Length: 350
Figure (cartoon, rainbow, N blue to C red):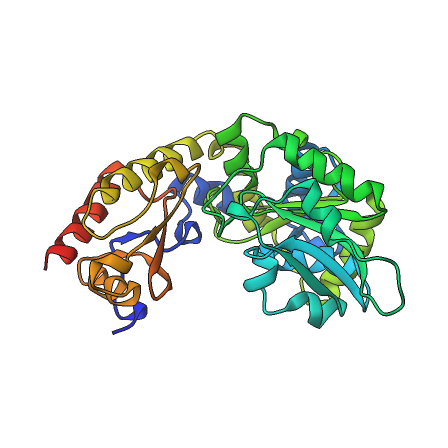
């Protein structure tokens, strides 16, 4: 049996599982539209202006996906032979099909770090000496929150230290802000403060914010001008995209503060399952909406648990043979969390 054999009642596999609310759909239905490739879609323009202001950047670009946001940023910043410094468990390292190598001809120098957060000293140690035989260190990329760091939130002081170290060495800096608004809500630090000093930064609309599609990439006017060239090289023109851009505007108006509910539900789920036999996790590690837990002592593999949970209408992702990841989101309330934890308890007892 595979994950696709069941339509789960409770889907904790990702916050990309969210479906637009009735109110969001209504906003999409009445959105004014035009040709976004010609900058004539008023809803797209409203969204990009809103995000640029939110992040304190000159301009922004609406794109189909977060992966495209990362890959376009890398393609603008880097050339063949350049090297990018990033956490070993970051999205651009393990979950984007080696796009940096494919599109920019660039490699990644991975930093092994606790919960996906590295230090200015880590950056200093990773920078290559300028020799013909070495890759050219060009870009430092951070991911906030860190997905496979367990949804960890970067401390603002650490972010600023990394930027300062990068600048002192003539490097560019990029933020993968797929779950940036989760970091904002969890930490109380504004999105503008987090984004300050970056050459490029983006946020995802299709995760915790609950939109059906899209991400918004922001930076200087010159950066966005070049990013737009890459957008069209990638086939990213979406024409009358105001229908989906309107969802982003609605989400920024109505779905940011409620991310705190997702964080509370994730903390509850962590507490409930940490008491189950064979489940290993520290609830204190759950800072936002991601819960990673070890199942090595349950007598079942993560894949077996995943499949048996599906029989109970609950979907949780298997990261590898012995670890699982659950993510709370807009479509998951406290009752869902309690039911999912109970399903896990039943499966383990069986």
